[in-house]
Image (cartoon, rainbow, N blue to C red; front, side, top):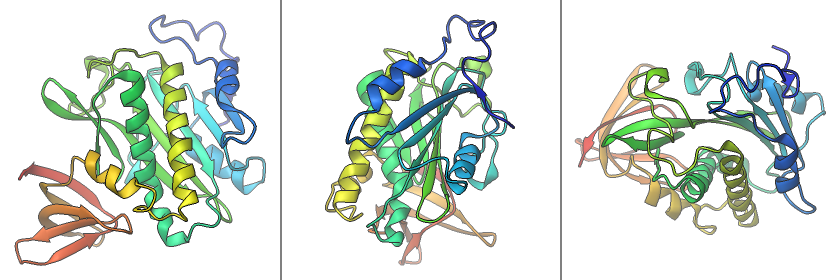
Length: 288
């Protein structure tokens, strides 16, 4: 679907006064600066997927590192394993960023979704005042009525030579009757002190710039830049019995005991072995 600029729908973009549009001019003024990571910030009214659009722009050379593409609404958004992600217009933050981590060994790029999770959780904690947790490898969790709910997700895709596009979706103002599934949540339902998306987005992108800069400066070493320790401290998966649903219709049940230097989740199984999981679906079964 062809992206539409956020200024295209002036007659309808104020139809829900609880969900005003993002201020693209103010976002650029706040985020784009000399020597900073973010070089271009674009807001479109509607598109299929910001990730797909930005991957295509990276391929044809029309986007470089530091490009941020934000959509007020997506109708073909997807998460891991091609799962669909839907939400009402302007009810969340739906954006993708293009990064080119030159100088970092490719095997360490597996830390980028985890790094993004830490950055998003940190930024939201500061601006929304919501306690967030991370479910390995790419889910953002909030607490609603004493229950853990998924309020966001992260998707990484390779983009041309030496580039990656990281997509982020965060439910901000979704009401209970708008949740796509019962186990979903939103910042509003978790008691956020603000649901103004402009400062929320600025906080998340500044946090991402900070963590990405630290990680690159350390050559992608997650221990040296503090990423591995910080991720472990905020990871709701660690210390729990989980089921890992792996490629090839295989599953492993065990206690999640660590995230190793390659970003893999390490499970201690009943057989007495420690099995690292690099890809798969994780189901939280119960606390230890």
